[in-house]
Length: 462
Image (tube, rainbow, N blue to C red; front, side, top):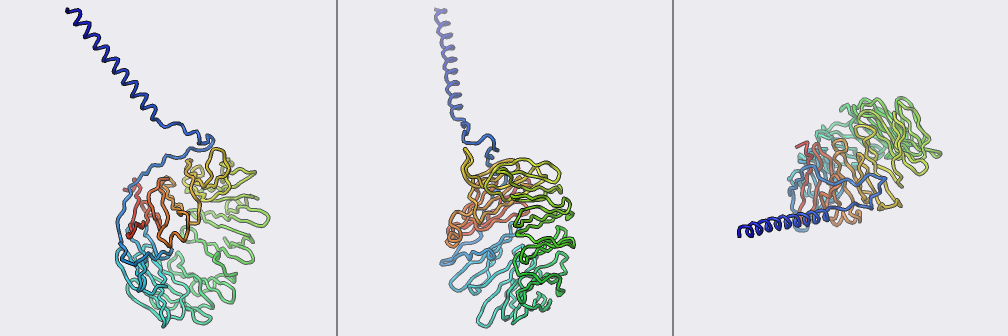
């Protein structure tokens, strides 16, 4: 009897062990069967698609609710966000006019065709007001100036403490400053007014008799040139050096006392410390790069971008025999990848850490589309459109991208705007503004009858 009882107990123990083993095996097989399979569609010769994980804090707050028959007055100069993510401005349209909203405070009405100009922090603004008696200038501190016959240009300082306008009458333009003083009277039409980095000198672009001149205050500094939006001054980061890019029958750049050109096209940039500069030039025969420290590099028949890294080096992308290469100042060229089109070439800490965008077509096992290569990782494909905007933070470790939804300006008129990606993750819908701030990214979202202010704060800035 004792032996029979002992035998049954032993048998039961072995039975329990077998059940445990069977269950363990079943669970293990089930877990393994749920593991992601290798994606055979990824080409082995290219970087893998980056795992898209947000690494910051996303916050959204309601800042406005539309009233009945009220619409967003969407134009590039009618909406804005300050770099602190707190100050903002936008304009709404009603039957009786338009209203400007700055940080929750609504001012108006103004006539429907009013034009607004905001300071960089969006705390202050100017408004060009068109009435039957003439043109007036309104300010955010509720002052009004005028009437004027014509205001062709409005300038406001980044801090909002100074402004200037070009008041045209007949064949001359009077530039009036915010202290009601006249800076000067210029022949023709004033196209642009801005402040020299020294904060004491105004730069005025004026066109007269089909010729353009550039003045420092009232001193005629440069000209005459063919009037063009490409005529501009390039300042070094410290504001002590400048180069002049201008157009004649072709394009030229005047730097370090020397005129360079003519070119069919050109881009100019100073290095971060101002010790070097680069001209990306294209002529009828070829393309080449001209630098202060490296001389002429080329001919390059497929130059696709140039940039300075923060350590003072530089590099450029070019295409040769159907392949793309990155060439720097100090290193040998290295093969990158073949794409139909390149852009958004940006260097970070060094020439080995960069971003480049490329349009891929016809590559085996790859979907056609626009891809981003950022710090050795690949993202995409995306749609490349006119509204494409790419911003970097933390030396490219954080990035934001806003894209058009597909129907362009018609979408915007109907209140359907863009979406935003943060580090490859879709983080917002119906976006109609994206700015980079001190601690991350900020944008507006329009949802039904409400506007939200959204912020993405990078974790190391919390």
